[in-house]
Length: 492
Image (cartoon, rainbow, N blue to C red):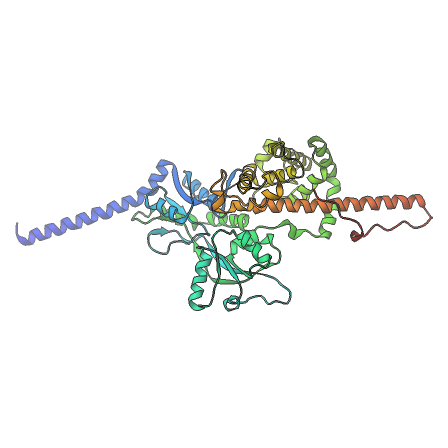
């Protein structure tokens, strides 16, 4: 064989080998996704945080959890979730092939290098500057106007990254980096005027901010950062292509819009609470259902006014109320809770009130018998709201701190700690929106106070009218007492 023929032969062989390698990559491109479908299992790693995954009334919840569950359902496979403590563990899962997908969520920085493949962005994380409105004090309009103010931000967060970017332009910019504070605690510092400025995400402010009336967004800081899923960086693009195709679909966009509203459009019922609104509901809604509260009270030995206050907190006494999480009725029962107390129609006022009272009694009976009222009731209400498991976790944290797990005042200080990895990683049920049951109990107590006052005023009015009728043409009846003349009834 001549030298020329040998060269052509080796060239053809080289081309053939290259073609085979390319074909193998193409076949492999189809293999990862097909292997997942064939195995019937999608392995996903994420964290135990508010925007990724947590337990809510003993049920799995979280924006990312619901979204990736919908993706697994789209593929026709089961979701296997691996819960990790930090971003490094999420990355190691991809490198070791322990997971097909890792989801950092909004609270972690997405790697900027090419270590991993990134999905299309399906939402964003906008950093905002939050301040407390103070009469006579101008709010900051740009980054220069927060330089001389005290600033706080969560350490190693995307928001702190935005501050580092600004510090390159404004070297005098300084801030306190909070390693162990939740968004709730950071906003509490602003409300208390301990700190002037908080730098948080817009979604966190939507979720937690309503519990802090008086706090406002001053301005957005930098561009909104894309939020993405991560997959292993290898020639196989089949899974990445499937993820991108799903996240870009109309179905996913609709689902994302629903989840955004569900998890980041929170509202504090106290924002709707004012004297006129409550009085209108007291006069127009309560009379038709009051008898059900009283009947349920006889069956369960729970004060009917407390049941009414719970119902007002839940639905404003609206039997047709439906939340974004699909709980319904005057007592806002979940399907599971309704089934447990034999409620067949959650929108039926009588069934809902009786069911809610029975469910509260179930929770109350789980509270140790040694605990007496009012702490027993407060703890039961917290368990009714967040789930008994999370309540027990908070009581464990309270005991560890050397305080009394049987006292509501001590337990309520530790429920918000269930938003901190330092604490929720040490208890059984993990992350919880621990500030919500605290506000839930607080709101019910306030509603109960005003309800008792309204009833008292109504009774005074009825007594006065009765006296006026009996006296007929004698001296005119006395006027009802003004609110500031009458001592407010005590709370529980």
